[in-house]
Image (cartoon, rainbow, N blue to C red; front, top):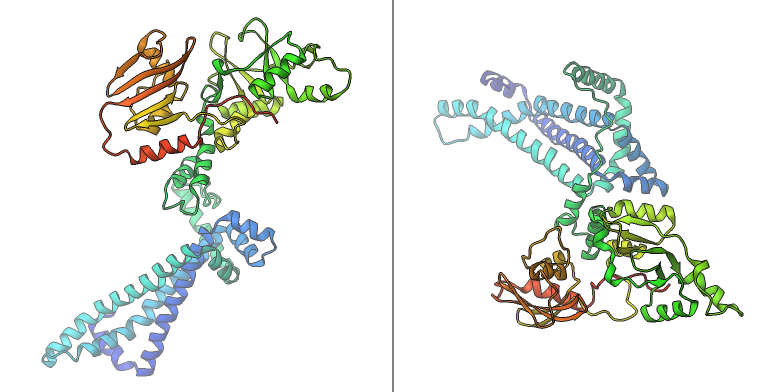
Length: 483
């Protein structure tokens, strides 16, 4: 910094043309600093995938940016060198001229001459320092940084060629700086290669970005839901998406083609497990599509058995994650697998369409309009399908029913509470909820009436979500529809 005496000496040695030239140099140096800041932030922050896409399309400017990103250590050293030198030059050139101007302005204060001189000499340097620092930070750092983050692709392509040219000019000096940096880091036990700057985003970070509306505002709600389903796919078990045992439509191993056609007309599926004495005795899988062509030929008897078209079945445990099940089905080329429980009995089945629906949602229109899982009957009163997943029911109606490993559906929860098979009309009161059995089919519960005994304070979100269920956006999973 300049001393008081030096302020006086500098004021005497500077002409107004010198001061004007130095002030113009100040803004030029700030502009140079802004250039390096904008170049650094734009090239580092622009997406590599986007640059690769532009390079593939033949964009020459993008190829320059790609070269700089591949040697990011050289880019950072170049920009840091430019920022440092311009900052030092800014203080060296600008401080003296601006201090003279500030001192001259302070001499116009309405004070006695001796006081004005003391004030001018005392305040000229601090005011000059903070003024230059303010201009440097705002114009040379913050503004170009903000613009570079907003328009990273455009600025990176525009500034890339200049940055690469400067890097080549100062390449020997930059090499010395980089080697010195690595040597000093190695002395403290840090092995730096310059290759880890572009860290891959973790799946957890991507999920957080998708879930945060301010960061994913460019994504529509359905696209965010699709991406969320992709990330959650590996956390879902086979048991959660399988068609349960009670909903399986199967054919006997000694069934005829006529009986198979009747089953297809009745249930509407295209693949069926072939069983022996019971569902626990699965003999294989039959695909109606493989039989359609022989049936079209003249001379095929409908009384012929289906034995020659039965294919081996593959069995998987009910707790296998979908991230393992999908590759297994792809490798084996089996679009349907049987799910077994811990005792080896049939727990359900899974088709490839069930896995696709877990990601895309139930986008396929059902052949027959399915009854919604939740129907609003009145104020705080609903009709619910007993096989509805209890976790989804809690989320949809804002309930707080307990979840355990003993059951996954509303029917399982009620059987757990009753400790027996309830009959239609029986009522169970649990906490603030009243459950009434509407209909059954043998030992199987079909429909339940649910009534909230105490009204919910805020139910706007609940009603909107329930209405989405009523429109048929979610329905019970079933086996594959005919192709």
